[in-house]
Length: 298
Image 1 (cartoon, helix red, strand yellow):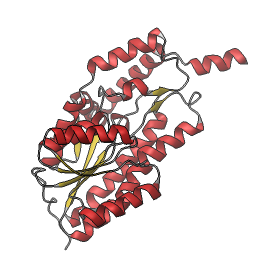
Image 2 (cartoon, helix red, strand yellow):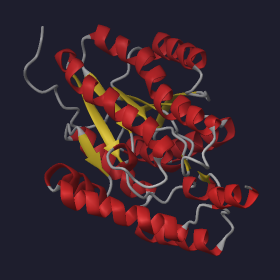
Image 3 (cartoon, one colour):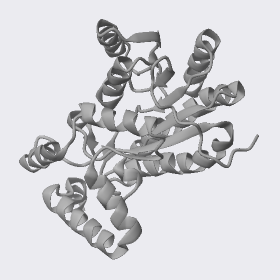
Image 4 (cartoon, helix red, strand yellow):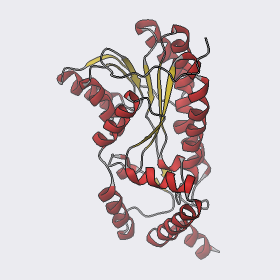
């Protein structure tokens, strides 16, 4: 029966079957650990098998329950489908499905290469879609409701400089979530869209910035400034799980993203000014090396 009311909230995770991607590090690891402490029955995946195994050991050492853990590349639809079929056959439909895995590449339009754009879409957008295709239908068929969590980014809300390719994938996640928050309501399934800002994860060390020398003093100074204002993965995990248990759609992990989103919606001229300032600052601090090389070669 079609429901006009809000989906029933999952007020706590105790005994709930929770599936999440990207469990081996960063926000995914922090969410898995925290959910385990809250009594969730965890079903985990990540790209790197050894790192995933270490997280499973951590969770179990704290008394948490991991019912399923298997490495997979979320950008590989066949791998996700096979994993999902095994998962559902053994453990039944999930109560909570969380798409956390992701990668980041930044750069100007002239410095980004085609494979950057394609890989970002394959992992950050098609990855969550593969999981949704595989695990949400069993939730619907069970008639027991549930919750879907998609992690986007501040770059899925606002026009951050040098983020065109990354934002293409994260705005896509936002679009999928915006539709599903209404489509899944009649099945009693809630949807949350998480939009983290700066989070001090290993991704800050490994993020690729096309055309920029990461060993340069300017880049190191910019990265230090990023970390200074970043929240910890544990703080992000707390915000995410609190938002899920409160049945929120928009989940922010820091107030700066909340403010920027509010400016975009309610004070557009201030948002426009802020984005211009950010773009000027980015191109001053992180000079476009790739463009300079093109000019020198000309």
